[in-house]
Length: 405
Image (cartoon, rainbow, N blue to C red; front, side, top):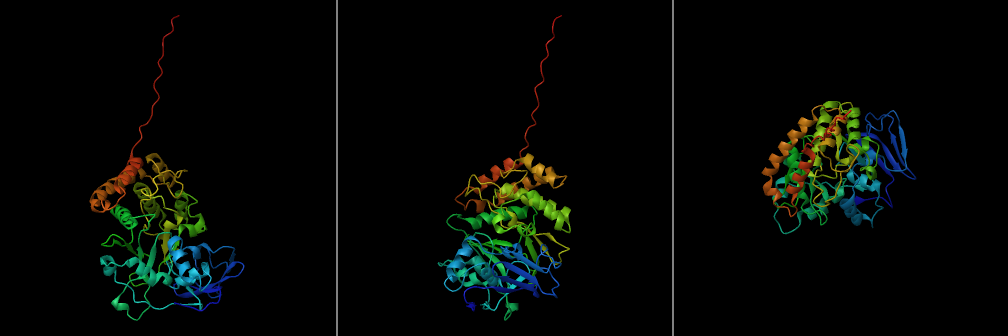
């Protein structure tokens, strides 16, 4: 990568699905201006009807893919001596390879073409060297991902695309010392979701159990982008506020934006219940999203980023409020939640999910045994909490005595 900027990046040209849309500038404020001939909006929250936007902080649609945690630290350490590391730099690094249909162009950053990696070789890696570290060193500056977990976007090698720009289509994740065996953890939880007929991306666990790999769902088989906006963006919230709000508010957003709200809300209900069953305390606003080719035809995205957090933080809570509480819910609160979403068969859906999770959990015993934490016991404990019917308390009849006259 070649850096041409002196000091910091102040101007970026924005495209939507490869078509020029406008320009983003950073001086005392962030300013985005649509081109006079722009035909596509950058977000359903920033319509073309308003041509100029100003904000003291980065607009949520641009902030969506800004890295946090591990990736942010690694990029900062790599580049801080060469250029000011800020949000404008992170956007520039995305280029055309970021999640969704927005691309970022600036003469200040020149990216080199890369051939990519074969998925089969990533999964089969048994070498002495740390493959994830090699992938980080090779692809860290070619795009960015949100989230705190160690992860990197990797182009998948394709014989048919020789000589062409290859979009990074694989997301490779690993564990760290604070969250050991996270790759196995995510593989187990995503397998449970898949068994419940909840749509998921394609995903794999490497043979050495060190890496969880998933294929991006915002790209078609031909490599064309699909628009994507997470619930933080759709609610106008920054990444700092991703834990503020409720699952009910996501249901309202689905009613507002989805072209098939009834279907998507039922799927969303199943996603949240599954998340509670597996002990996931990180189902925040950025971990639910909508996809679209046309803003008038938006749909709920597949489920992603689901792990059991309770094995690392035993007293963990939900990321968002559910039925006015962040405590992991019992059956009563789940049914209250279903009623708030106007789902009439919440009881039946809950019972079906319980059977599917229990059956698949038994089939995953080879993976649950690989973990030093007893993830199976943790999930079974949550299943009991979420599904057990509480006996209805009845008042003891009062005894009446006859009074003698």
